[in-house]
Length: 222
Image 1 (cartoon, rainbow, N blue to C red):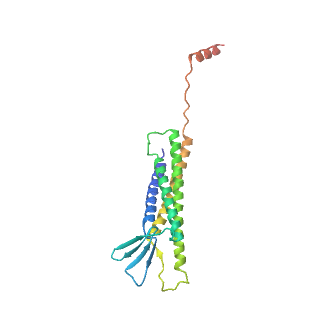
Image 2: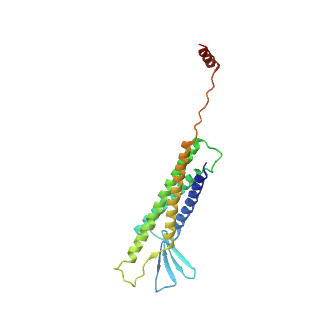
Image 3: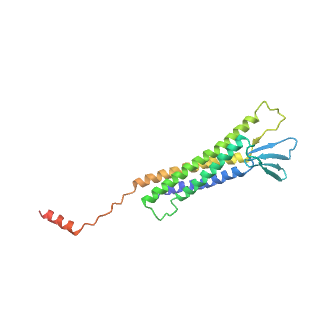
């Protein structure tokens, strides 16, 4: 097995795990949007997918979960659905990618097992790409809405405006890591397919019976 293929798949699996953890933090952290006012400069309002928090400069934080699902804004509902789907796809793909690593049961190198590992890695890479897209869509959409509302000229200048929170940057990082991991896994699976085509095919030897051997000898004499 080529060392470059093992390096690609290990790097892809590592980026996959880090990206999934970043997606989990993005989903759970209540820092998607932040709002600071001149009336209370020592406090800021943080909004997430599941709760909103009031954070003070001294480090105190008070959070309250949302009471009603129907009362949520449409962008928060969409972000919830897509982020949960990204976590599910990412977890399944990560398990498939780990099972497809060549270091797992590396003592066996049969063609059937290598083909199975190629399929597992390809499926894991595809799910990683899907998870990356599912993460980037809600994060970028909420960021777009925040920028539009920030520069809305119909809102008076004295009114405070929402700004980007730390969860958005974490979500962008998670999406890029998922895309990189999926690309590396797919490339390693393609390299593995090319190596399988170059492997020699084992042709079993069929033992010749005594009768066939005697017939061959007679034909040679004739």
